[in-house]
Image (tube, rainbow, N blue to C red; front, side):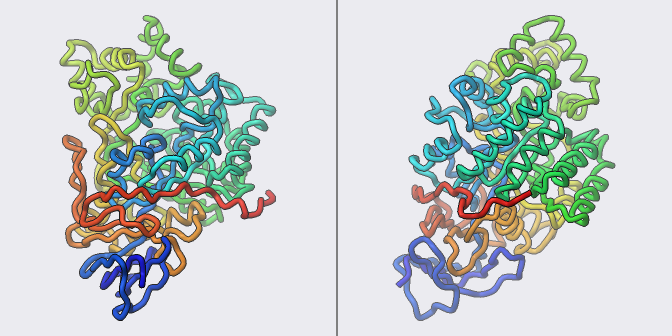
Length: 534
């Protein structure tokens, strides 16, 4: 007898092969048998007639680093079929820290990662142990965040690192890899990563590559200088030998649409050269990030507290207002998209709760002031704990990127307030709106992009495919009904058509409802893998 027996499903195994009819028998958290099991029984049986049975979805770009310990909040991920997530994104996360840098990171990340009280850890190992001591609905993996490593060496100073400082950073990346991280991340648009030069990036990537790790990067510019930014990280991969994954790939702003095809061609050329390149994408025409990203890079020198002090200085404030509207030398959200397309997603205080869901242009009108002043006032009022949604593109471009063979699906979901709908709907949206309704690709190709593709990037062992001996992370959904319901106006809406989800062989979702099961595991890079010589 099996612990769980799934009968009569259309099995999309994650390889990209068309579905096949197989039953799946599960024992001790793993797939024991895939065959005709009509003569067998299970303690729990699931009839998957007319349903697709696929590997659980792997989300390669999330910001659940803290709220994953709150299943009542985090359950929205398993409810859309996600069984494994990759934390430590954009070079800015919760570990490693020191007693000196910890309060700075707590302040900077409050709007992005949420607040769960004091952090009891410093190292990556201690953080992963903290997760292991909590109840997790899904599996957790981690990247070494470049920004955290950088602040351990030179604080939030806005300058290039010395060769000795770079060497120390590389050593810290190696330590993080030894403690179980799967690679290194950076967000070269965000402080303090924005101050790094190419030599620094190459060094930290060489450190990750020694352990067969990957490089997951929010590039320096996703708009007017996107081609130059892509060329930079491709060259970093070329020099370091690391696998490159470009986060939330896109080209922002209607004035930059002509750069999309050349950007994809750059990625293809890198692949043809022999560089292992992939990218993740969320299926929407709007982005979401911390609101302080509207500011030019020099404003972030010294960290959040210093940035807020600068906003109180009249001369600095006027300089910022001018640059936000005119400077094309950084990834300028305001210049590229306009205040009417920048919407407040979340704030920390109750006094400004009514601003969630409103554009900065609307807030300026409400307050009777220029939108630039309204934006800077809001940053001060909330101590920078604000997130935003940025409407940047058109659906035709999303479709073009989604169809590319190097694409994998990622949500980049951020909790809190009135979040971007991608937090609730990314994976069902690809399955329903794009695979079924718009016929972007067959359902089994959609499944590959959500399962084995990110598993390959991370070199995950025994996950990402439906295969005997693999962990039983499984999503079961109705291919004729699956669909996202989250909208920008009402984002907190669960999807349709995700019937059952298993995490490590235990049923986390049954008949579309979260069961309360917390079978998630912290997955560490297998240290038995030998260190590669580079």
